[in-house]
Image 1: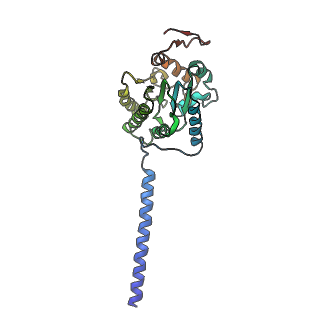
Image 2: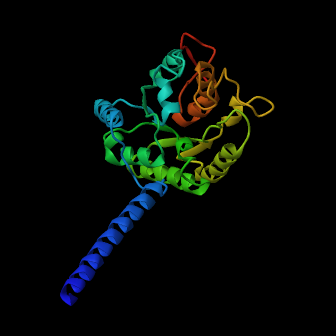
Image 3: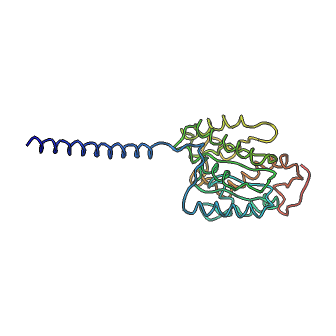
Length: 267
C-alpha cells in the first residue's frame, strides 16, 4: 500500500509540475501578446504587405527616383485613390511626377515596419534628392509619444546612413480625430520632439497640420472624411503646403501651383 501510495504521490507531483509548466507557458505567451510592439525594432508584416515591399524593391531597381515618399496609408493615398475612390492622381501628376517621384507608402505601417523596409532593400541602389517622410499615426494605440518619436528618429538615422547625399523633408504627423483630444495631444508631443531633428542642412522639419484644421480646431469631412485619411482636397493642401520647401530643398526652378500646364518659373 505504501508503494502504491508513493506511486500516486509521484504521479500527482509530475502532473502538478506539468500543469504548472503549461500555465506558466500560457501566461508568458499571453504577456508577450499583450506587450506593446517596439517602435524601434525593425519588423516585417505578412500577406499583401510583403508583395508591396517586393514591388518597391523592383521599382528601386529601375532607378531614376529623385523624390521619394515614404510612409503609411496617408502617403499611399498619393497613388491615385482615396477612401471614396476620387483620388488625387491629377495632383500627383502635376506636382510630383515631373520630378521623378516614387511612392513607397503602405497602409497600416508603423515606424518599425518602415524601418524594416528601409533596412531590407527599399532604398538600396537609389539616391533621391529628397525623401518626404510622414509616419507614426498608427503607433498611437500601442506606443507612448516618446516611443513613437524614437521610432521616427531611428528611421531618419537609417535613411541618413544609407542615403548620405539625400535630404529629408520630415513632416509632422498629421492631426487626427474630428476634434482636439488625447490622440492629438500625443501627436503634438511626438512632433515637438521630432522637430529637433531639423539640422538646417540635410533634415528639414515641417508642420503643415494646421492647414487641415478649421478655426475651431475641428477637421472637415471635405478634407478627412474619417478624420484621418485625406480626400482630394486634403492632398491639394498637402502639395501646396510643401511646395515652397521643395523648391528650396531641390534647388530647382519652381512649379507654381496655379499653373496647370506645368510651366516653370523662378521662385
